[in-house]
Length: 595
Ligand SMILES: Cc1cc2nc3c(=O)[nH]c(=O)nc-3n(C[C@H](O)[C@H](O)[C@H](O)COP(=O)(O)OP(=O)(O)OC[C@H]3O[C@@H](n4cnc5c(N)ncnc54)[C@H](O)[C@@H]3O)c2cc1C
Picture: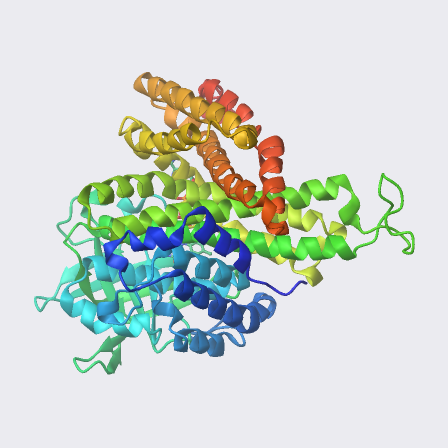
């Protein structure tokens, strides 16, 4: 298996050359004095060293060993505790955190790159900092000053970790029907009782305390999603001087045996009148949790991207080494018994498909992160509002399209190894198993697609979509005289026109047919994803073309990858559009009992 090498050159290209991070960061008042390209570079290099040397090497053994449950205690796989300490001592846990409470206040455009490396190194390990950062976001945005002061510093430092407790045995997608109860104690605290399942790193031995954010209902709460409140429930009580007190009345009943991310503990958590504190307003729990979930959803896409990149790195190394058959053009390596498989067109098709998706997704995730940064660091209310709309629109695509494509990518990576991809030794099958969960958690991809189509496009009459298409149109108009770029600009124009047409059709269908959105959603999400990637690849091609004369092979390579994407992948939008236009009747025709 190849050793993980962080794609620093490509990250720097995306950040500095495609999105002009220096000027972008300088334009945001909230980032003044926080970050510049030099600092960012140093951050990325340091992160790469730690992840390449100390975290990625643990990934395989953690898959074999798994987390272990023993009488309520959970032990993380060998090496995780020490790596977690090294990660926290480096200050990585609080990289994007609020500086008032010990975070470093870095923008998402930068922290997203570190997250990609971390998840590529080990998804199982990376989930602990990921959930902690997400929990901190919710506490920071909605918690009282007292909660923030008490919990955030130790969470940013990683001494305590965070967990997110939504799911119950009978309630996953539909959180409106959760049964976990909260009752008021009269002293500002609440008693929480109920069972949560599938709680990632809900219990473990890497941190001194675990801070759970738990969704529960008060006795008089309205039915459904409007009656859910959010509570902070620590594993150990925290005394006023910050020291740890007695154990809260909650515990881990068991951990799941599962298909992938076996190193991470997926816990059943039982709360038996556990003490908790309200985060945000009563009955506003879902809205508060969404602060965390929007962030988590982008990171889940980034997680998938990391695994896909690792799979590519393995595959390309193998394709150079593995000797089978001769090139159709004749012997390329006559001194060898056969040519390396990288000479074969079909193997190149697979490698290029992996790379075009991965590099496109890296640019797209950074693009979404830019919008997140504007919502957080701009001081212009109008810009912030427009950016919030874009984050809402693009987040389901960044989560679901990227993770769907990442599974395809890791399967291709496995295919390049032939039979050796199917067996344990080379690590490719682990990546397929690990990345699969990114399509399921943080809202299954089908739900993400309905969120995009129903809430983000149809419900607001396509307003946020217009912001996106107008931006792409402005890019097209600004470059329509550039003959060298025409091979990208013309098809991009066709894709944007098509996306608008298809959207108008579905909005119309939805007026009279209640199943129209659900029937179109998945294809629409992919149509949107391909169109967004076409925009990314056109922007990347523009930078590459401008720098072709530099002699740096990186730019010539980028341009070739952009061509591959446009000529060999983008045609998928035609079949997706045809599916959508065909409508949903065939999905609903078959009577339930005939399935
Ligand atoms: C390894 C792992 C880690 C996890 N970590 C956490 C965690 O840390 N915290 C936490 O709270 N949860 C966690 N989860 C739970 C995860 O978020 C849920 O499994 C997920 O949201 C789906 O819920 P469900 O499993 O109940 O599926 P269901 O909601 O039962 O869905 C089943 C299927 O029906 C579809 N479906 C459901 N409703 C609709 C609808 N209205 N329209 C169309 N299709 C629909 C779904 O898309 C899905 O395909 C984790 C799960 C796993 C497996």
